[in-house]
Length: 192
Image (cartoon, rainbow, N blue to C red):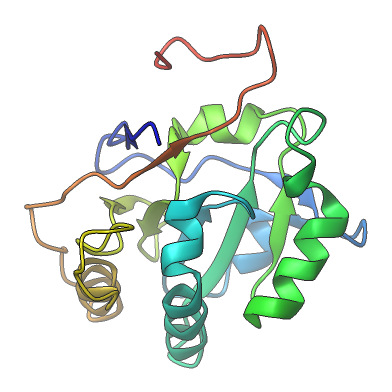
């Protein structure tokens, strides 16, 4: 299992725009979340063991923070032709199985992932009211096989701070996961 860290996009970066389809074909855009005080963008997929490890807690965390007004969106940027476990049909199954209450979108061109400099799954980004990046990195210290419980501690602290209008802690640790499965020849310059 190759471990890839987050690129740690610079804090203060404006949220890159997106307009991507859900598995049912309906499009969701960044502008759909304009009223939310805080936005959480997660790059995930279906088959990655690192995502599977945190998926249940991520689903619970998302529901909890959506109730507090946080907009949550997840994006799958993997090459679905070479990784059919990440296809839209499988994404629909994942939404059902995990009880995802947020849009789970497919970035077929992988351009949105590149705009966010997303490198791994899972990869998390928190944007404040002005849609400036205030947190990027891990959900918590849990990884498959390290026996640390999945709590979402780092992501929760960042979301709590952003909701309170405060800056999340300066100490932000990169997420670790499987690399995004880039289409052959479409790898970004930061990959590798």
